[in-house]
Length: 218
Image (cartoon, rainbow, N blue to C red; front, side, top):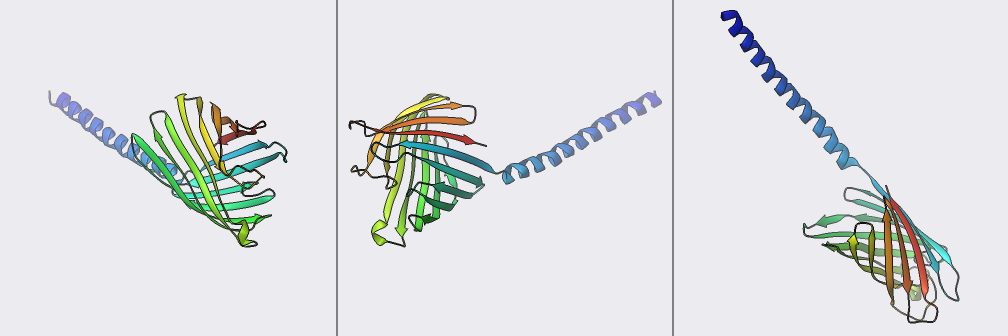
C-alpha cells in the first residue's frame, strides 16, 4: 500500500507542477501579445475622384498612419489643386453605447497654397448611425485673403455591415463654386477592408458635382 500511496502522491505533485508551469507559460505568452497589440500600427489609403461641372476633374488622395495616440496624415489636392499637406495629431476615444473619437491635428500646407492649418477629425457612433466630421482652418502665409475654413461632414446609417447611406456636406476652395456649403447624398459599400462610396453634391443644380471614393485600411 505504501508504494501505491507514494505513486499517487507523486502523480498529484506532477499534475500541480504542470498546471503552474502552463499558467506561467500562458502569462508569459499573453504579455508579448498585449505588448505587440499596443505597438501595432494601422494605415489607411483613399483616393477620391471629383467630377466637377465646367471645371477640372481631379483625384484627391489621402494617407494616414496611426499608432496608439499618434496620428499622422498626408493629403494632396485637398486645400487647393497641386497642393499638399502633412499632419500630426493626438487620438482620443471613449464611450460604450455612444462611441466617440476625436483627433486634434496640426498641419503644414505647401504648393499653390502655403500655410499652417490647425484641424480636427472626429466621429460619434450609436446603434447603426454615425456622424463624421473633419475640418481645418488654413492660415495662408502667402496671401492672407486665401485663409479659409475647410470642412467635410457625413451623417450616415448602416442597416447592414456592408452598406450605408446618408447625407454629406462640404466647404472647399479646391474648385470654384458659388455655393458656400455644398450639400448632397452618399451611398457606400464595403467589401472586406475596401470601402467604395459615391457622393452627389448640389442635386438641385442642372449639373451636380460627383465624387467617387475608394479606400482601404490595413
